[in-house]
Length: 305
Ligand SMILES: [Fe+2]
Image (cartoon, rainbow, N blue to C red; front, side, top):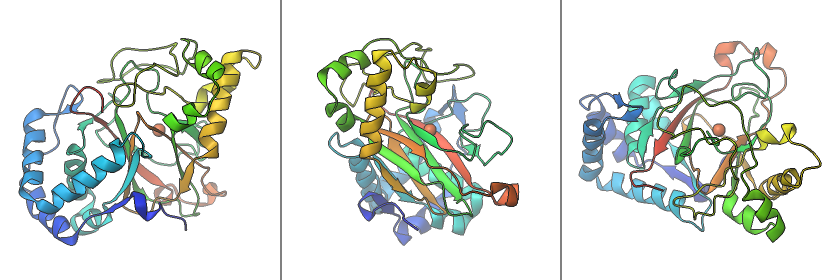
C-alpha cells in the first residue's frame, strides 16, 4: 500500500494523544453558529493548544505544510490513535479540536452534520462524491464567491478492496506551466459548475466564474473542477485551456492511499484534490464495510489563508 510520503505526514506524539484524551470530555461540544464553530467553543479549543507545547509543534508543522506558497498545500494528520483510544465520538471531537487550530470548522452543507459522512453508495451516479468511480481533480464548492479555505477528509474505513487513492496537485505551479494565451482564456468569466443551494458560509453563487481570479494564494483561488469539462464545447478555446490545466495538474499529481485515521487537509488556495476509482466488485462488499470518509471544511481566521 502506498501511503502519503512522510514529508507530508504529521504523526501525533503519544503525550499529545493522552493530553487531548484527558481534556476532550470537559471541553464544550462543537456547536455551530451560522455554520461556523461558535466563537466561545473555538476559544476553549484554542486554550488547549496554548497549554501544550506538543500541540504547538503539531500546529506549526501543519501550518507550514499547508500555507507555504511554494509548498504542496496539503498535510496528512495521523489521528488514528484518537479514534482508537477514545472511540469515534470523542475521537471526532478531538480531531475537531486539532483542526480548529488551523481554521474555524465550517458546516457548508446545510443538510449535513459538521462532519459530513461520505460513504460508498452504489445507487447514485457512480461519479458522484459518494460513488465508486473516478472523482477528478477539483476544489470544493468551486462555484461560490468564497469557497472554503481548507477541505479535510478523515478516513474512518479504507476501501477493503485496496483502491480509492487520494489525488492532490498544486494548482499554482500547474497554472505557471501554461501558455500566456491559455491563462488569458482561464481568466475570463466563462466557466460553470453544477447547482448552488443549501450552502452556508461560502458567500454567494459565482456561476459562471473565471478559473483564474488574478489574486495570489492567500486570497485568491484557482477555481478549477475537472467535473465541468465533459459538458463544455469541444471547439471553444476556453475548453482547450481548461483541459490543458487538467493535463498539467495530472502530470504532477501525488497519488496515495489514506489508511484508517489519516486526516488529509488541503489548502484550497494552493491545491486541488480528487480520488481514483474504488476497487472493482463493490457489490460484493456489504455497505457497512465499504469505504467511509468524514468531510469537514475550514474557514481561515483572517480573510484569505
Ligand atoms: Fe472534494
